Every structure is written in C-alpha cells, then in structure tokens.
Length: 483
Image: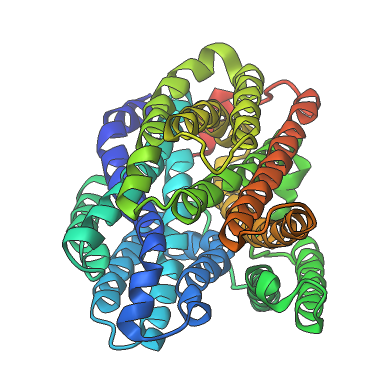
C-alpha cells in the first residue's frame, strides 16, 4: 500500500520529466523536413544527398529500438533515458555547427539513435512505474507530448526559416534538452527490475543488420526502382536476417527481445491495429504538406498554419481520451476513431488543383479527431496484460515495428504517388490538355488522391481485428505485486 501511494505521489513529477524528453525528441523529427531545400542551397548539394539527413535519422531510430530492452535492464531505464537525452542534446549542437553535408548526416543519424532510445524508454517507464489505474491517463499525456511537437513543429520551423536560419532548428533543442535532463535526474526515481544475464550477440547482429537493410531498401526503393536488383536483394537479405533473429530469440535462454509477448492475443491484436493506423496516418502526414507546397504554392509557414488546427485537436484530445478509456474501453474508442480516420482520409481523396485551404483544414481535423481516439487506447490496451518485467521488451518491439512501418509507408506512398502521377500524366496528354504545367499539377493532384484512397482502405482493415479482442485478463493486484 505504501509503495502504491508513493508511486501515486510521484505521478506528476515523472510525467513532467517524460513530457519534456518526448517533446524534444519528436520536435526534432517534425521541424527539419521543410528545411531540406534551404540546406541544399547552403551546402551546395543535391536532393539525393540531403534526403539522407531524414532517411539516416529514421534508420538510426529504427535500429536502436530493439536494443532498449537489454540496455534498460542492464543499466536501468532512468539511466538509459538520461544518457539518451544527453546524447540527443550534444548531437543537436553538433548538427547546428556541421561544416558539410556528410557531417550533418552523421550527426543527424547519431541524434536519431538517441531519439529511438528516448521514445522506447519513456513508454517503458510509464508501464513499470505508474500504477495500473493511472496508466491510460499517463499514456495520454505521453501521447500529448508527442502530439504538441507536430502541432507547433511545422509552423515554428517555417517561422524560424523565414526570420532566422536553419541552425536554430537544432539550437532550439539544446535548452529544452537541458531542462529534460535536469528534470529526469531530479524527478524520476532510480529503479531496476530483472537484470539480463548476458547480451544476445547473435540477436543484436541479426536484428540490427536486418532492420538496417530493410529500412534502407524501403527508403531508397522509390529512387532505385522497386524491381531493381539492389532493392530486391536488400529486401530478401533483410527478411532472411529477421527470420534468423526470430528463430534465435525463440530458442535462446536470454533473448535480446522476448518475442513470447506475442503469445498474448491482446498485445498482438492491438499492435496490429496500431500498425495499420500508423501506415494510414502517414498518408496525411506526408502528402498534405507536399500537396500544399507543390500544387497550391504555399510557403512552409503558411503550410504549418493550415495544419495547425488539426494538430491542436489531436494534442488536446489525447488527455480527454485517456480519461474516457476506463469507462468505454479500447474496442469502442478505437472503432470510433477508425471511422473518423477513414472519413478524413476519404475527404482528402477529393483534392483538386483549386481546392480551398479550409476544406483541407477540416478534412485533417476530422482525420486527427479519429487519430486521437485510436492512438491512446491501442497503446494502452496492448500493454495491459504484459507482465511488468516484460514491459521493456514489449515497448521495444512496439517502437521497432512502428519505425520499420513508418519508413515502409513513406517509401511505398512516394513510389505509388510517382507511378500514379505518371499514369495520369499520360492520360491527360492523350486528351485535349496541352499545357505542360497544367498536366504536371493535375497529374500530381490525381496521384495524391489515389494514395489517399489507398490510405482510407488500409485503415478500415483495423475494424475486423476488433472482433479478435478478448476480455482483459489483467489483474491489478497481481501485476502490482510483480513490480
């Protein structure tokens, strides 16, 4: 009873420390994308080179996620989180003073490695330290910190690029990172659970190489060509390495990632739904800014302002859904959310060259309204029946799969957009349309619409999975006693 009460008293200090760390990690992901053209001019380099600043960050984030379970058990999640925050802050400074495209890409990748550890550590700390009855609300606050950054990121970065320089996109991380470091050291209690006996070296090699190879194939597939020998070879090698990794983890005594968590149906179903929602989510996240700037001719700052209301809706909805979760449960909330995600994405498939900004704003608001109802319940429900000592492995798996799917979604949607735009361009040429610029804008818009249709269909695939949800077998007393 005293232990539970103590953890109750530590709820807000712990969540404040987690909020700042998650916020600075996600903010760095959302602010840098629109700076690519400026960085190309500054370093006098090509788009193919500068894209590695984004791709490398994503690769490093995905590669470090599977290592969190072992490192957190070995050194404690508080120390690992603190180490990741310190590294993230240092590499932000190094990115700001980068002397060339190669140095910027390297420092950005190291920053991404720390970001992957931050996201996995913060979620694990919630499920290991926060009492069960407050975890849904804690996850909603964790999601809020991850949503506030995208809400202000594009607008803030557009303002910085317009009135300052690209260096400030990295320098702004430093004061926030220092605050997060101080709060983490001061407010999060030190604790350790089960300490792994040894490091599963074959597991590390196969999962790191497999993830790296697959993520590289997904990231470069659209530029290399999906049928090219490089893309196909990397995909085949990546799949073989991950199959070896799964076999190793199921047969070794001390696995790097305890894949036995997939035996829990609730975890597997919720992770599947979360993955579907993540893939569908990237249609709007990736394509909407691209459409606004390519077709509508909007500036980065104007693009951020158009997307700001929908991002605010998503941020504000997260704690509300956290409070609703104990009353309505995951099935009703997620189903409700999927319907609204579908409606928002389907509305976005009606885009035209002269579509109004208000239409885009409201379609994104509806989409993000649905995301608010789907994200928090799926994250919370997936962990409800996982023993506390396994929570680090479960969150590592969650983050690992999410990063791989995010890279996959962006690559596939980019490739599909290119192929559908080319298809519609040929159709328009065969008609009476002759103006080159008109054909370019129309074909690109029609390609964007096609991708949004696919995204809306994908998200609906999550609804049938809700029937596989069993009753919650979690027991507060038994899980609490395992802490």
